[in-house]
Image (cartoon, rainbow, N blue to C red):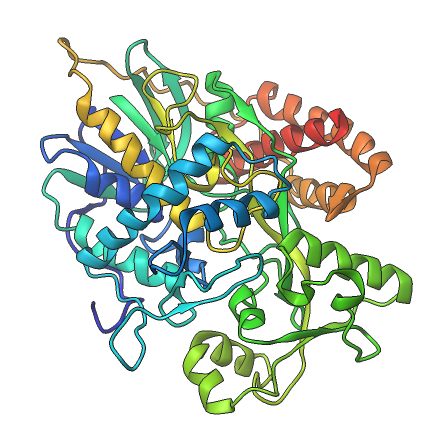
Length: 500
């Protein structure tokens, strides 16, 4: 493993997209997109579109780890049951079986590829416990597991001669050619580029930026979901949004720093505004209850006390151990003026993860032939109503590998494809504040619990905004693409909320 996992790998990155045709276009360079590229056949010509820098993704922000049954004391039946309990028994059992039974082999593949998971004094993989798990089955790299995985996978992908990576390349649209797809994107120079491919994999991550406060990265605006929906693919259960109970609440700003589930797994307790532990009064599992349970309990306690200043306390643990176990969290908190080993850390629920998304089958295939979706933007059904901690990275690699296998087995086309021409640009200026208004609507309408009056009013306004974005002839800019993506996402979420 490289010494500095934050260094951006060098290799086959390109500044401008010069080819018109590829076998596969992968949109997104998180764990799902990178692992798919590594599993695709070496004869496939692949273009990867990276919205910003190569290592900026929700995957890279994942702290806790990746869940997999790697011990003879543990069982896939136990992992299956824990996931079903967390998901309210609404999980798709077939996709969940694929996840828990095939996941360990993919994790072993990560080890073979050189991902640096922590080990104990005997040299064995160290596995920790997180909320909702009945056994310590979380493999991790300190408290920055996602970054360790993505960094290593990116390093390997950058060495593949059949893969081109376009950084600062933004997806605009995906249009079916039947067969194949025409992909419109914006390159690093803000020029529109049209390419075509036989298959396309959407691995664009989550939707966190549709909210005022989120743990997601700056690129999480739901672009892949919006593009798939506009192309005619089925999108499902967009209201299944997970609000993480322990986001750092001591600083302003849209992006909230996550205090990992693993901190509670190591013994941290939650304190209410009166400085009292309260979780055992609500749930026998206490702080280790599933995330949706803990978030709802915090909201109930906040409404009862009419205060929102909640804290996480792990000061009773050995300070040297905490600094070793959570170096990134420790340093980030010090930057904000808090010492994890001495202070109560201010926390509050925050938007974190989407369980719904683009409908896919067990191989990541959407309802449009040749269009695949993997990772957080997809809806595999493995999570049910609430994702079990550390199942997300596992889902990303398992279904990315399965999608790649289907693509590898497909017959190549017997004729070349031609991308669609670049559309004529409009000139109407984009109104300021659209994204801010969308975020305010979502925060009022659906934060942990639903405000149905605000949701109904908000949906009407969202539809008005989307109509104007589609009809007023705006030029295609990065701001326009994100505003439209967020508007479509908000529309889909609120429609599902009100349908319930």
